[in-house]
Image (cartoon, rainbow, N blue to C red; front, side, top):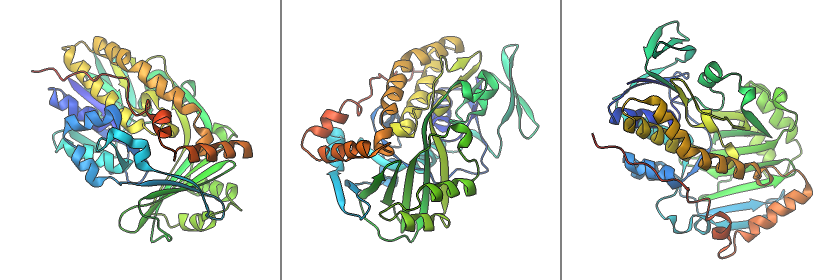
Length: 395
């Protein structure tokens, strides 16, 4: 089948890889003029790691990844509040766990395509018409083509979802926070191998030293004014951060000064996408477009790879019956993704405490994570995805 995939983040290229491998003809389109850089670090494990192993890219992910040894929380004067070793959390996962920049994960997946998939940058969809046993697609450039299936892998703000299922407001669950991630060259101080964070009422600032004298900062900010009050452009977004974090402690003033010269800058609201179905006719959604668990879940990229893999395998197993494949796709993954979304909702406490009391609870929880056996009791279940990946059918 000819399959159009919209979006070249994580889910899109993964789906293209497995569709090509199982005999289909995928076409990948991406709105950006080139592969995107920047974005936050992701902790990559679980069933997503299984998919990476089946693609033969696990070793490259480790080469590109960052092997952090400590998570450390400090107060407004930089004094250690709590810390725990990374190995206390990852436990017996061993080499089946890696921390990696989302853009490096996407780049590795794209490289696995090895030029075998038609890829169009600087393009996206303007209209999707599912009629007469095919999907007629008009692109933003004005050209048109027909496909057997269309898959939206275009993230939280999916154009395919809007065109096919309706306005985003029907499905978006805003969690009252925004997140900003940016990279700065030459920032000091550096703390090699550690994720250093400072939290106060309403926000958390995270600093991680990367390779080549680059430092990544991640700001999670409580923003309860509603979707309409979330700024759109980078200048307005940075102005919001400077206004809301004025007077904050630790290195916050220096970080805000460095932000203007950042080599990458990402900003978005923290939201989930909740839908009764991820498919309609000959159109399907994967990744954040279908069931974004939010930045708080920490596993969105791995889950996106799982969704893409399962959809591709079910299409291969259905022998051309896309309706049966779509139903099996939702049946396999619906419970898992709902459980990940539900678990993420309560994590705003850790990323942007609402009050002094909530901040105190967060700090106590951080200290407890440094005790033997506690991390496994708290996180052990979440590190193992309750899903069985289907095998790729033998041709």
